[in-house]
Image (cartoon, rainbow, N blue to C red; front, side, top):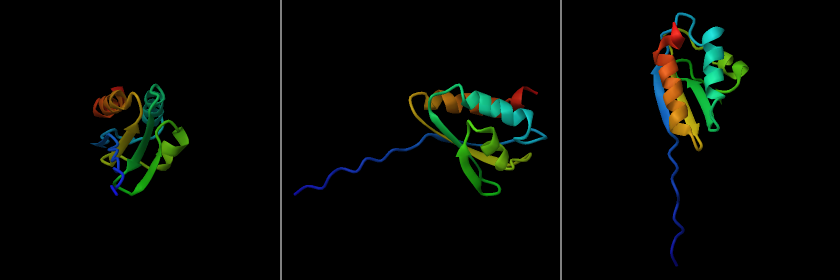
Length: 100
């Protein structure tokens, strides 16, 4: 008798440091959520610095509850048809300091 094969799904993710003076609060959080909402993939974000999350990256309330401040390390996970594009867009947003 053969064993069934176990499938291992590796969720694409990225780890970033937030350099914005307000962290993910107010306008930066809104931009983060708006960007995440552009994609069909399921996207979550965690604050690795304080251990909060993961939360739905498309939820402003969820993102705000992470209490991401300047110099916090976040992890963004995505799964779905456009997961790579979603991660790239969110990475660019954070690395571009939310356009400021």
